[in-house]
Image 1 (cartoon, helix red, strand yellow):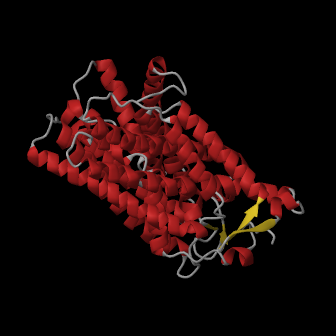
Image 2 (spheres, one colour; image 1 turned 120 degrees about the vertical axis):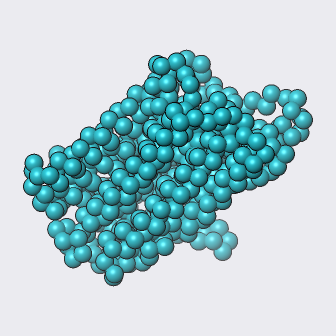
Image 3 (cartoon, rainbow, N blue to C red; image 1 turned 60 degrees about the horizontal axis):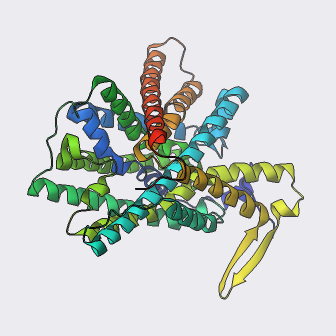
Length: 460
């Protein structure tokens, strides 16, 4: 069997276009609700009720707008009957040219690798929380229960090596649906436990302006919190690949817009509930970076452990959704470069009992190497909120804001210096300032973390 890579051959690709609005919703929710949701209560504590709520709504509305205009660019020049662009980079190349194509590629794949690292960090943290919970129950709280994150990071990596052999997005649909269900599970548990704590008596007071700190530390905290919220809406980087799974009738852009609206509405409700209720439960002073860590002392510890299991299962799927574009880039390039190489194109049938699947050497080697790279980085630098903020800063402005707006301007031929053009540029500048602030805060936090913990020697 020969490996078929979907390039510009509509006949080959049409067999992969079987997705629906609900499968697209599952992919969107899987990519969005994951790494950042449990840090949002901490972000709210840094920003306070006013700035936190406004930033939530602003980023949500902006991300929805930019995602929908990007989805109109899947086909070019006409959004319904034009030629397909199978990746985010191909969209940029079709409308903005080669120079922007290269710049987009560098930012896009840096961001995808960074988000995959973030998922690995969060999964290891959640597994570590389960281990600490079990330790505390067995010791009755007498033991300090400090453990290394490395075994958990390696375990997550091994699972990803196996799942990385799933060939493409279409065959990943079942995993995305499972991951989406898990995200609802742990977000619901976090919301329920927060409500219970609020009813029984919150641990601290909230405020309109957030945690009181020294001015310099307050600025860094606000910057990091902005990055955490921005990271919650990174789904835009995968919308073209998700759209490429849809049936061609009705038009993909219309179906994808419907899926995006549903997905953004669902994720925004969950984000606001997790952020505001978690903040109300713990207050300015005691809210943890990872919301679930605040409930470890609860008598119902098994519920917290269950939520962390849901987090891990969700991140298993989310990692694959974000990694697929990276895999595809390498495999398409290799197939075009060496079309007759057996190493690149040959599929070998392998069976274990009744289970049968195809193995491709290129897929096995490049995907295993990618998982190894992300695992090493994640175990070396496991700084939760700061790494999340840095990930949000890297991808938010260029990929979620700048390129979609420039594509929209090019596609609709919006006249330069017109009122609409100025409005789009103003939106881009505001989001750029948010990204720069978030990056500064994140780098400051990682620098502080490296002063306290050496790489590969972190214990919690």
